[in-house]
Amino acid sequence: GHYTGAAPLMSALHTLLIGSIAAAAAFLLARAIS
Image (cartoon, rainbow, N blue to C red; front, side, top):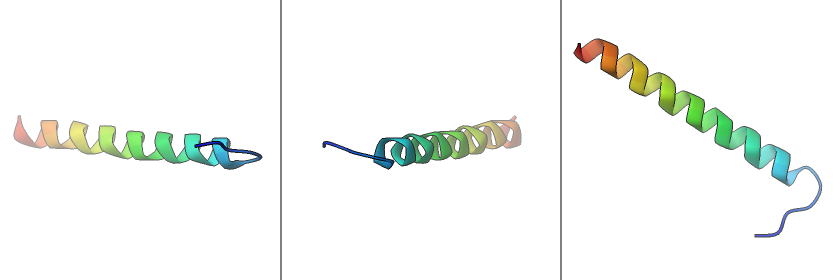
């Protein structure tokens, strides 16, 4: 969609947050398995 103002920044921060959480979870899971 089309964003104006602070929406793109918030969207980017949300994406980074979800990505970092997913990466951390995958890292911990891999360590737990091995």
